[in-house]
Length: 369
Image (cartoon, rainbow, N blue to C red; front, side, top):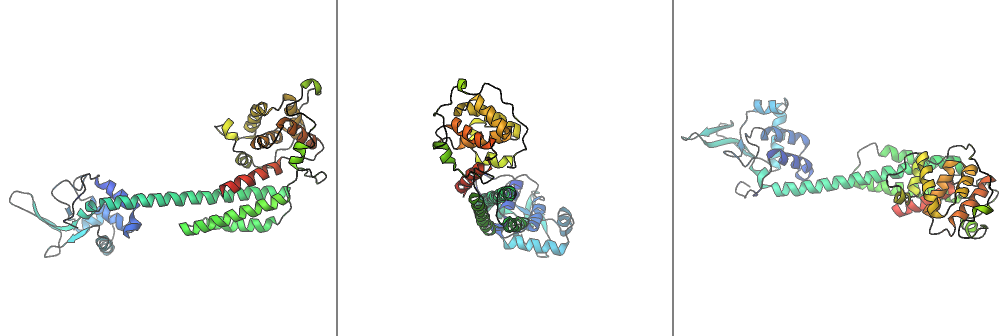
């Protein structure tokens, strides 16, 4: 170890400690071991361990304890032994067991007894590689944890929505959700997070199955007409919007409506194509309404069709419907005619945009899985 060459480029000593801190598991040392190493390194008088008269430091136990924030000498000895066993320092004992430096006739250090820090320089490539791998593993763990958190958040929102809009054993799925949420409170390793992620995926799948079984454009159950049937069979309009001359000339004012029960973020998540038109994102219901009004002319939805939808559904629900149509634009032959058909159903109390969004969200979740 002492004879091995030192790399040509050597960072300052604190950068080495920082890299070793990231790589500590690979070297089998603890944060307390590194606290003692930090104290030892502080006795080297230069920024770089490669500078000066050598790499041996020789503080007394009292001085080292003071730099280690008052650590007891028996504890110091245990951590120093761990650093030696990890081959991060080498012990040079004097005949009397003391640590000191003997100077030669020229005034320079002739011999030094203490702890040699040279292994930190020799093992720099190894330390750097281990640090990079540790940081990459930590990032993967962070991303995996985020994925689990997001899936559980989606499940929580869907369960809350489902309790109000669909029949199902919601108590059971919510109990499963709470159990997973409790698991996330403790520190989990990669294998445990991978297992929890699979369970979260299954929970989302089960929730979507319950919702899909209840999927119906007719929330009252009186007119269960499939969306595609509306699209191709029940629309009495051509592919383009009819001329406004054929429409009612009276202005239709939106009537007050209850706020949608759907969480806004689920609507945005279910309709990612919104990002192509509103790259800054949607953060409030008024922003969604503005975005839908901006997008709908591009879909061939006329002013009259939009006003009528607002009057029948409320501005927010009309906006949800439009962005849902946007997300399915490739499947819908006449977006304007489709909106009119859904508006007619809404006027009779037979349409809510919830099932449309749930279907889109289920598709989006399947892609993510």
